[in-house]
Length: 236
Image (tube, rainbow, N blue to C red; front, side, top):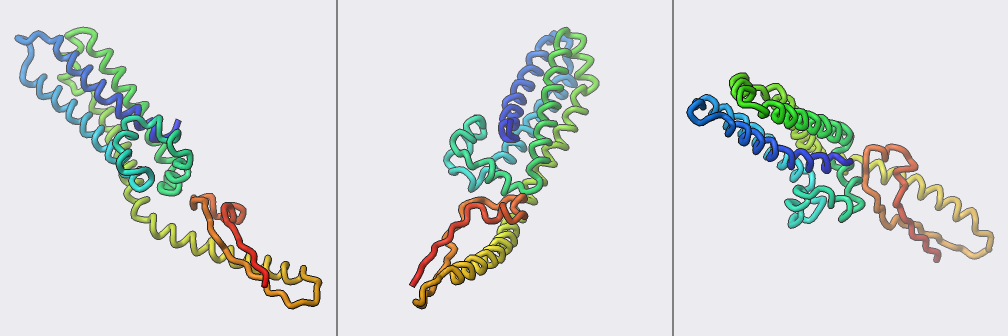
């Protein structure tokens, strides 16, 4: 499962956790509830919602210019459609996140595991009124919320750095690609000239037409650099 698909699971799980918290607090008799319980419930709900919004912003930012703007919101809510609609999106995401791509996915897996742990903890605590009251008194979710917060912060930093460096990376690796193509073209040109056996004076021309593949970190190898390159041969 891709990182963005995992993000979709997390975005769907957070509202469930908030609603479960609210249902559990309703088990405390109104006369025995203090403002302290209501405050703690609101604090936990707000923290969860804040992480949901931050994670949604990360997903939106990573998709900008990779998919049509009109579809970003829908794809964030239904990430399973992402790769069905655009099979090349994985390569685009890898190019954008660069060497941070694997860390991005791993961090989302860790956040998802922590979120599942939080939901499980909430489910255990709401089984009886005394558990809910005791849990709300001792802020039982703070440790898990702190881990989720740290994970989302890592995603934000990765995303921001990747966007800042995107243009420089393109220029640097396009330069490397063109230098390599120039070397390949020279060798091909020399081979073509040496292959003409007739007495006529032929002037072969070799032109780089296009390169369709996205540049990703693995493109440092020559075999990867030439993938997608097309040459046009002319003879006058």
